Structure formats: structure tokens, C-alpha cells
Length: 296
Image (cartoon, rainbow, N blue to C red; front, side, top):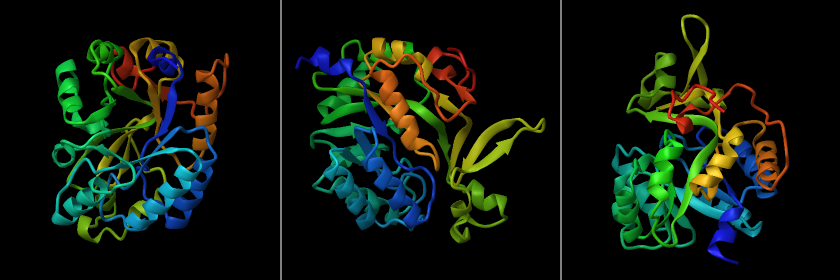
């Protein structure tokens, strides 16, 4: 099979779980993902190190299950590290000898430098062919584009891609827009971050924030801010292919994720139409417009 033929089939990746769910719910969710259309599954806690329902050993157990079903397993590191405990977790993920690692901050990159076959995550802010060449020289073999990347930027970055470098784009789900040292969920309940009572467990898809006019605006997810609308490149699959993207990332939600993956697989394989669970979607970033707009 030639490199061009391999690129003809878009792979589907399930990004790391961004929400805080009970351990039982997480295990049930990934049992379903094991049977899903996902080719690649990213695992691990990437939002808040206070979330302790899933221990590192639990993620390893999930990884074993997924690998047994033929999935490529990737362990993700946190984009923001604030304590020695956070650094210990990053080191543990980086030093696991079983699966690829997605580096989401330059600290993880420095630990991975010289290793081979790691993933440059979307939070590294890599926007140029020169930065792509730099991480390739450090051992990265997949670039996950920042969520706000336009098709023009992606095309420019990939115009002279290093040999063996895959490209992945955030294709469906609520956009992870920003991280903060402050926990917005705790603040909503007048609690301190260090004594948050784990209120994120009460919001399996985050807390919707509306404007004064009552319009959906953002979703608060602990220290993370997300888009209220579902970002979806489903109407843009032709331009995604033309840009040279190899992998489409779907972000987990509490309902409809397996169905979304199945529908995307069908569309990528040639189905003429299909209905995704979400109706309020946007794709502005891909077209160089405000992210919440629907351009396609």
C-alpha cells in the first residue's frame, strides 16, 4: 500500500475525556468505544489533577481493553502543570513503556525529546513548517493541529511535511478553548479550587454559560473553557482531505459518541449523507472566521 493510498482513508481518533465522570461510567463508556469505529483512542486526565475517580492503573486497564480490540492507544499529558504532583503524573505517562504519548506542553516535549513515535498535541501551538520540522527532529510522528487552525494554515504547514509525519485535526465536539489556574466550576458554587467538593461530577458535559440575552455562549468545565456549540468539520470533509489531514478527532460526550463515530466512518467511506446527534454546530475557524460561525 502506497503512502498516497494510506492517506485516502481518513482515520478516526477519539480524543481524551475532558469531563469528570464516575469510574463506573468511564469504564462503561470505553467498553462501548472498544466496539466502535474509532481507530485511535487517547486516554488520561488532561484537565484537572484533582479528578481522582480514575487512577493511572485504571487508564492502563482501559488501554489494555482497547488494544485487545485493535485500537491504537495513546496516553495524553496535561496541558497545564501547576504542582510537583502534576509533574509526577506527566513523568509517569511519558515513561510508560507500552503506548505512544501525546505531549500537550513543552515540559512533556522536553522529557520526550530523543524518543521516537510520540504525538505533538493541539496545545503546543505549532503553526509553521519550521515548527513541524523541529518536533519531527525531536521524534514526533503525528501533529495534532491547534483547534483554531484554518485550512489555509494547515495546508501551509503540511506543504513540506517531514517524512512519516501524520496530521490530525479536531473535527467534532465542543472546542477546548482555554485553560486557567482558576476553577470556574468551583467558583460557581462559591468554593475554593482546593476544596471544590468535586462539583464537576454533577455536570457530565460541563456547565452551560449563557449571555445576558439568554444565548448559549461557553461551557465551563473546571479549569477549562469550551465552546457552547459543537464544532464540526463534517460539512468540510472534502477540504479536510485536500489539505492533507490524515486523522479526524472526535471529542467524547456523555451521549452519542459511538453514534457520531459510526456516522463519521460511513461519511469518510463514501456515504452520501447522514445525521449527526448535534444540530447546533459551527466550523468558523476552519474557514478563517469566528469559530462560532457556521460557514459550510
